[in-house]
Image (tube, rainbow, N blue to C red; front, side):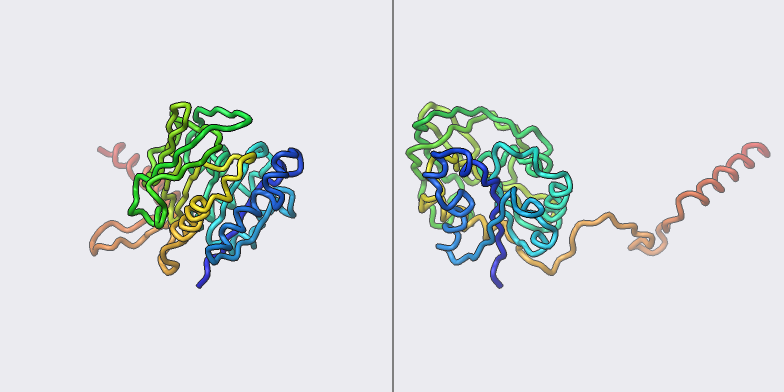
Length: 268
């Protein structure tokens, strides 16, 4: 069964910034989608300005993996959409947060931290060396020991995130900074992968190794199996073991118990 992938992108930079339009005439989301097509996927592309902000309940219900690229307009994403994406991730949808999506509201909510870090941007960028530190990880399949990105925006430590469940890549920049740049988190039944490279004025999403990493990540954060139960808030009134206390109703029995306790104290 094919993995249903949705690539979501603000798609504002391409309209507002001539340089971004020249680097990504097909849009950033389009470039990411093209890279996935090279690996056999048939992604759907949606943007912030689409109907329902490109995040309708029906679309997300039919999405196995959501790829998110955002930057300047995080606050425009409706609360309802943040709630919906979070619910789908907890239920098992994979999420890949790219570059400035570290400040996407849904990513910050899933992390529970500010997700702030150090950064530095220059017109010509600086060299980034993306080191593969878990070569046996599925996301690192067919990825060399390091990937050299000649022009990138520096994202550096300290990075205010929970300790990743799996750390696959670490970046070094020519200015001397380092960054946990390829992190996996498990939330409910869902897997989240944060991948730092991808500044809008550099053609990073055309790099063959970056495209391989994103394709591998799609496969990895996809539900490992669809037949298992999902997390819920269950009442379990009947205990598993015989003779253990059963659940009682909350209000009336407790009030009655307090009355009985009061009578007993008066007669003693």
